[in-house]
Amino acid sequence: MNLVFLGPPGSGKGTQAIRVAENLGVTHLSTGDMLREAVKNRTELGVQAEGYMKKGELVPDELIVGLIENKVTSGDLNDGFILDGFPRTMEQAKSLKEMFEKNNIQLDKAVLLQVSDEEIVKRIAGRAAEEGRADDTEDVVRNRLDVYNRQTKPIESFYREESILTEIQGEDTPENVYHKIMAAIK
Ligand code: ADP
Image 1 (cartoon, protein in one colour):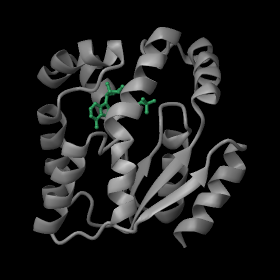
Image 2: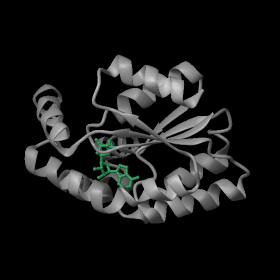
Image 3: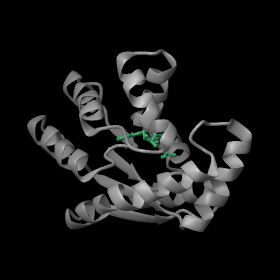
């Protein structure tokens, strides 16, 4: 099963992606996790990405597309995957489509978790208190939401037109959301 998970920051996409990937026995690939790891290890990518992430901006497409391309061409995704946090711009979505075509990979579904802006701001304030992520302060969250609505939302229509978009109401308990996703991808 080859899936892309879409949804605004705080939609629960990461949590659900991990659980669904485990259940399906496929690879979970989170670009947010990869980037945070790069920042922690002070790699060249990390040093370049850090400033954008702190402000809640997207890192430039050139930095991230190559990272995903490596995973696609290395065969790491051959047993199925969930991409979590990629694509995030139309440019990334188009690059991904090309990569898949070249490597004979079929994307089965794009799963979109729908959560309203008000609910997101509420949730992330809670997460900030618990985890202390540097990009979870209210101003930065609002910016990340803005960035989502401007740069990532157009991808929803892109996958809708390809007839692979599956919309899940994400304002529910994590348990219920999980079962809704599993039912929708069967
Ligand atoms: P969230 O979905 O909660 O915003 P992520 O962990 O997916 O969090 O991403 C955190 C940050 O990492 C983003 O705000 C952005 O700066 C950067 N990032 C992650 N994935 C991408 C991507 N595909 N393109 C550009 N930037 C990205």
